[in-house]
Image (cartoon, helix red, strand yellow):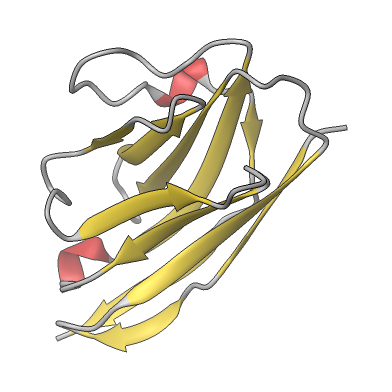
Length: 128
């Protein structure tokens, strides 16, 4: 059974950094797309970054240059390093996975509807 468990959220001041982790259990394919999404109150879920089995990252314009998605060598844990945080980054952050297919090609973030598995979310709060 596939399970995703996020950790690393918290409260920081603007300009600070956080690193979120997503531990993946029950991998069912060596081909995958992993993503980080976020949702602020009253807003739609937004794709933040994705990475696929080829190690190719994609970022939303709003986080380019500030966030970095990565994975460990075992490809069992995925991270997003978030630097230069602003209050606009405040949201619940979720990791997501789909198996059997890589992420979309090009600069587009693979949409949330394409992912089959989701974590429970971890809250990030950035104060000014």
